Image 1 (cartoon, one colour):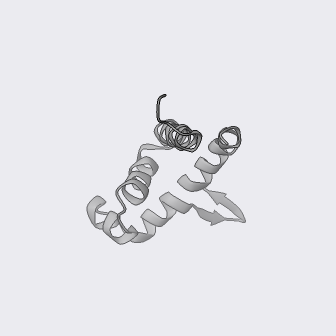
Image 2 (image 1 turned 120 degrees about the vertical axis):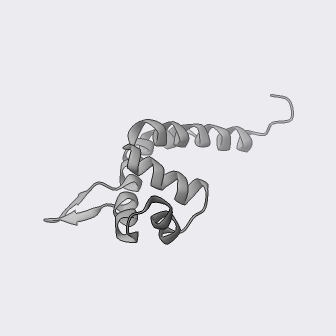
Image 3 (image 1 turned 180 degrees about the vertical axis):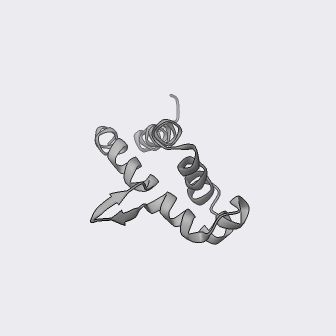
Length: 91
């Protein structure tokens, strides 16, 4: 691309990978929380009000919850799992 730097391409590639992971690797409820939190910049309490759930529910959708020493759910952990190998290729 004319006028496009390598870092711009890397950023575009990363953004594409992240968007694809959000669209395919998360549940609908996790995806909704991630989009509102990261892409729209809403706080957890604002998301909770918009969705009609508690702030604790939003936090669990984003970060998961520990049960018997095991992390259950959590969109961010799932995205790290999916994106870890992919983002290593973009540099």
